Image (cartoon, rainbow, N blue to C red; front, side, top):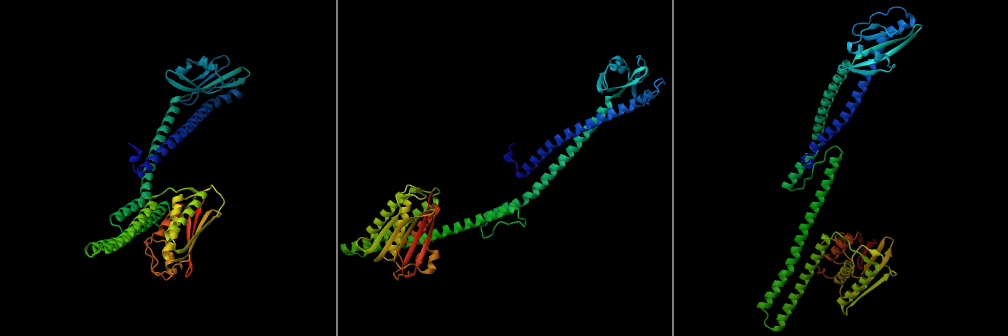
Length: 454
């Protein structure tokens, strides 16, 4: 079974149990080794206690006959002449007595007839010579103790691991309960959208932080959805008006025009409406492109200076021989550093700002475009003498389809679609730049666009 098909709780429990088993196995091996050492040391102590009375007797009264050992004690006391004064060793060991007499004092395991014996020699020096005391212990006792301890460890560690696994399961269940509540709440929000948000627990833990982050995402998505609905509504309204006018003009040209000149006037008026409709569609497509674009453009400072000059020329061509003056200045030396905006997008910024100024006061005035360096990038400034904006409208100037209903200049409300500044703002935000409005009511407006170097 693939791990990705298992739930988080199962993976937590399985992983915790696997770790516990590995740790338990290592701990069991260590404990068993320690117990084996303890049992071995205990057996050596028993061998020493068996030999101790004979060592003491031979050390003080070597001529006295040694007594028989206690019940169950395997020992042999051999005189310097090789005669066994005491011999309770098993028959299998007694046959190897000559071989055992040659061993040193180190304990060793002797196997005979399929039985392991732990054997240790002791030597006592007397005036008659060296006595040898051979003490032995059947290894079955040691093996029995080790087997008992091993089974006890296995059972105990198995119970501990099972308990650990159950505890991990219940802890995982408790830890995931808030996640399940979030999931159920999300399903309810998806089934019946409203203004509710995901529940945030009282504890300031990772799940509560996740809930707060998701709530922020939900708010942003709702704002985005509301904005999209508003854009669709505004775009529908803006498109419906010129379409209705266009239809009316064409119907009038068809039904009421009696002369060629009258027909031309109606068609010319319809063409103007169609031009406005085309400009609106172009602006909407431009906004859609900006919203969908994720990668920033790039252009050198020299390319932006060239685009600034071209934008000023395009503005002059628009006013023709009117009284509006359009000038530009670039206080920048030749520079090949790059700015985080494409040249054609920079030109679109300049065109929109110039067109806004011309729309606000097309009959006279002065428009000044300037470009110079700031510490982090370049600054584009567009100044006009169109009277500025109403102060209450300034915070909404970058909203889509927003138009100043009462221009300070006293002219009629602009006939544009209210998409010029939103397009500028979208391009600038994509370039990680900033755009500011310096409003001078009764005088004019200054728009400052700062774009960073790459």
